[in-house]
Image (cartoon, rainbow, N blue to C red; front, side, top):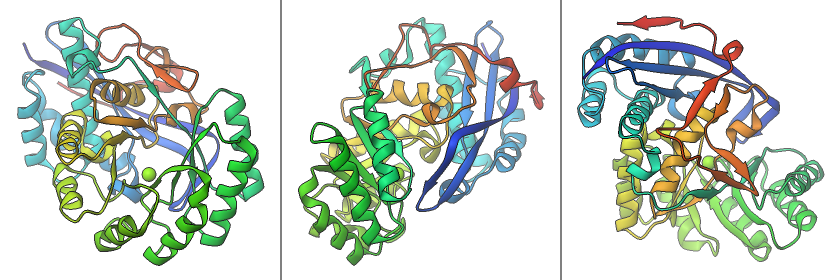
Length: 367
Ligand SMILES: [Mg+2]
């Protein structure tokens, strides 16, 4: 039983409105979808959502990585995921979102062949996952308005993007808390935007606002700075951009630089390595969140299966598909109810059909 053909699709997904974080503004998510076809009539789907600012990848680099990877996967066993990862790592360094797409497609195939929803094969800890919805950086009043709108839609947790100007950032967080009241969970993400001392200044000013955690306050490679903020902060600190790989997780733990870790398939290179990060963190008593880049419901379904499977994943930020106007998935995949991502009792990732007008025709076929 082997991989017979790999089809590659490039998709361009538009956001409802320009989405601003401390690292820049996005209007479109340019992703790459893979369809892995086996010789036993099962196909698996995976998605790469490259981020140049975070994983140094673009749609073009993903396609270039596939040029090297995909021909070598023809004829290989789709169940031997560890072998495939070893092979991909030998063929190209980095390129984690490209590798995540392949890894996801193999997991989809395994779930379908076993006739089980993927999360059941990976630990089956829960069937629904509370997600936040992200509010991009805007003037404080506008952020409060957007937050209130999200709460009225049923979201019970908000992730506020900050990290451009410490004084205004405090205002943003205060305005949102005032607007939404005490019941809604609020977490904030500075996306590396502050210097360590600035981070502590902001955190001291928002201490009384019941903030769950502060994500990536300082530069990704400033592990000392992150450790300083964690030590001084009364609010838990989550590492995001500082942790891509299992080795990064060990580095952060040894430096005592975070209370929490945000795991993303696009940073880790897929589900297999994400599971390793979560296991390392669990051994160090560090709970994880599963987050996302700009995935459609295809990639978000994979991330939700992971979040549902493992006990040590206590938080989820699985909302990018909800922020995209262009819908790739027509039927199937994870749903949304009362701020929770719901996993359908369908095999594999549970994706049924795609919108053909968004998916288009394959731009590359390897066989
Ligand atoms: Mg983040």
